[in-house]
Amino acid sequence: MTDSTQYFFKTVTPEEQEKIAYVPTFPELLEKMKKFYGEKEAVGDDKVTYTYNELCARVARRRAFLYEQGFKAGEKIAVMSRNGVDAMEWYLAIPSAGLTIIMLPVQLNDQALKGVSMKFGISAIFSQEEFMPLMGEVPAKVFPIESIAETEAPYGEGIVKTTVAAIYFTGGTTGAPKGVVLNHGALLRGGFNGTFRSTQVFDNRYITFLPMSHIFGSVCGFLTAMYTGAFLYACGDMKRAVGLIPVVKPTCLVVVPGLAEIIVSLAKVKGKEFLGNLNTLIVGAAPVPPRLMDDFRAFGIFPFPGYGLTEGANLTCANMDAATKPHSMGIIYPGQEVKVVNGELWIKGDNIMDGYYNDPEATAAVMEDGFLKTGDLVEFDEDGFITIVGRIKNLIILPNGENVSPEEIEDTFYKESFVKDCLVTEQQMNGEAVIAIEILPYGPEVEGLTPAEIQAKAEEVVAKVNATQPTFKRVMKVSVRDTDFKRTPAMKIARN
Image (tube, rainbow, N blue to C red):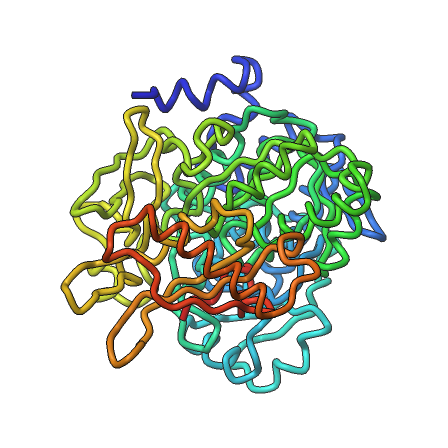
């Protein structure tokens, strides 16, 4: 069994460990940023670039603006913005003032925005100009996202590890999502966990791809960067961000598989120079096909798969040995207690949420004796590497009583070069429930083929995979997509 602490800490020297040492509150993180990285470039965009000292000073001026409005400790302040320097500053300022931040998904319409503002008791929203037309019926104060005071202000009083820092949405953007309540210690544990990788830890350059309303984007894509003194180039347009790679020359990117696919496809056309100085890819939030990892390794780039969930402050485990264990999500980070109950992963630690906002029943359903019931079905190998085999809520119960995990079946298909993406569901055929699959083919595998030939090839792949599976796991219905799947804002397939 791999020793978890040794596995991760071997990547940093004792001297470096002091720089990335875990801190439990946002004020302590800001002090760390000034102490170790003061004059280094921290954040920037097309118009401005700020050092860590300048960033911290601006964050202090943002706090002063909050105090000027009379907000009290614990009030909920929202931000509605695409990725940008302003949004980053508010993400640091609001919790460090003792308030609770809510990063709003930009997909919300006016009615959904009104609904979540009422449900979560939002006192104020700092909005990008683009979203101001949605604010008409919002029962909260609304300020331009550029709002800032002339003078600096201190941290909020009484902030400790267990002080609530943020609420994240989970379960959709329809106006009635659950709110995951995370304290300072949980968020900063997540950011700390993200610092470990076998490639360079410090002096990285990032382009922000994932929205900060997504836990993966704000924890691994932002807080981890602040821990390690990285430079973050802010870009609110995901498509434009891809084109900026050869210009900004990031060394590390935090992406979901769909984005990784776009990036490597462009590199195949434009050559390795398109990737600039990129050497590390942190990829998660959805299954990572082994083919995709192989494509990046061919360019000398090391992909790091990992696993986490909003309720666990994003980062639960990571795989620094993807070349030898390509189907695993890696080793559980130190400081967590884990157990497997009827195949389900339960985790406990200071990265776990306080609960769902104002929803004790939903909280009780997923928490027991301090453990979070993740809802994920897992397996551990003899070295302690974890593999996610499915979600309990997605299980297909067949007429013969067998329980089938669609994700487990999908994983077998991701090993086939023909498959770019796929979705396994339960469907009806001749009046009976059967396992069905939709396949989005990988472009080079079907170039020049007719639709009929593509369908025939898909059926050949399914027959090949079926031959390796027990009868009850075999796919009986096959369809091929000529357009992408509907996706969530984080580019996962929208399974439901």
